[in-house]
Amino acid sequence: MRDLIPVDRNLALELVRVTESAALAASRWIGRGDKNAADGAAVDAMRRAFDTVAISGTVVIGEGEMDEAPMLFIGEKIGSGGPKVDIAVDPLEGTNICATGGPNSIATLAVAEDGGFLHAPDIYMDKIAVGPGLPAGVVDLDASVEENLRELAKAKKSEINDLVVCILGRDRHKDIIKACRAAGARIMLIPDGDVAGVIAVSQPEAGVDLYLGSGGAPEGVLSAAALRCIGGQMQGRLLYEDDSQIARAREMGLTDPHRKLTAEDMAKGDVMFAATGVTSGPMLRGVRRTSAAAYTHSIIMRSKTGTVRYIEAHHNFSLKPRAFVD
Ligand SMILES: O=P(O)(O)OC[C@H]1O[C@](O)(COP(=O)(O)O)[C@@H](O)[C@@H]1O
Image (cartoon, rainbow, N blue to C red; front, side, top):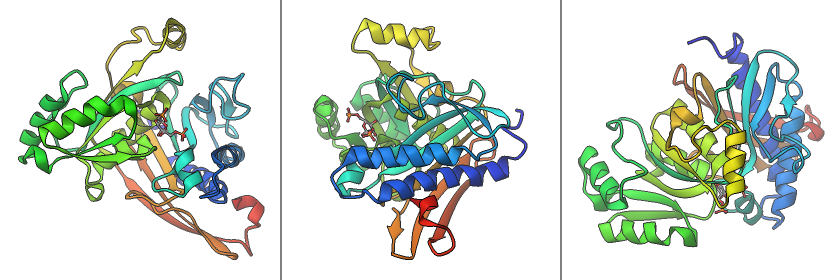
């Protein structure tokens, strides 16, 4: 496999600087009840931070189509020049969580070789994910909830009632919630933020064995990129509300829009994933601010090497003008 780019070590730090910038900007809005302001601040900061990253990036997963998003729209070219890469961004994943001061909102992005990411429209995707070290195909999007829980329990040499299933708390999930409980599994309902929810299956300290349910397709691609790096299995299938969405998916290059997609189908080749905590969760601590400094906690990982790095940064306002960290 060819290198993503020859200066990948520098790129890792540069990517963290980008997610830190978005998280710092969003952090000023934590708990203030204005999710649009929080999101806008994160988008603006992330877009500015990308200006100095030595890549020729194309936004594949972004803030929306060109006519609906002023910045980080699908197809936008970003970076100061360098290797051609695909970019997936979610400057503030969990806008509501941030606005209400809840757990697990993050600023996140992923980078792949040119053509590495699925071009997914901004629609829903059905998702299933488990952590590393399990037989391939142990769970399947097309199997019933009961069957998946039975096979997973067998593979983990545990009982179904030892298993915890993470699900977005939505009415549309009432049947899978009921089926999990009927089978004896325990459920962790999350209010928002299924990128962190999916990644939780690969983090023993999060205590999640299985992720189930539908959420955003762009978030699905970012989650797939993360699992490609940290290990685990994921499947997704795009969910369409009407024929125009199917037509849009075809236009974006999906020859079979109803296909079940693996993590590799969504994030191919050498992939890097970065995130900075905005509010705290099992993976990352949120931004902490004082009048003199801010503290951020980030993760950067790469599929080719499997290296997972956590980076804690202290941003000193007296040496680094607040303008650069706001
Ligand atoms: O709220 P919905 O419509 O169920 O959508 C689910 C999606 O919304 C989120 O919970 C939060 O998305 P935002 O950060 O855009 O608000 C995602 O993590 C998830 O994929």
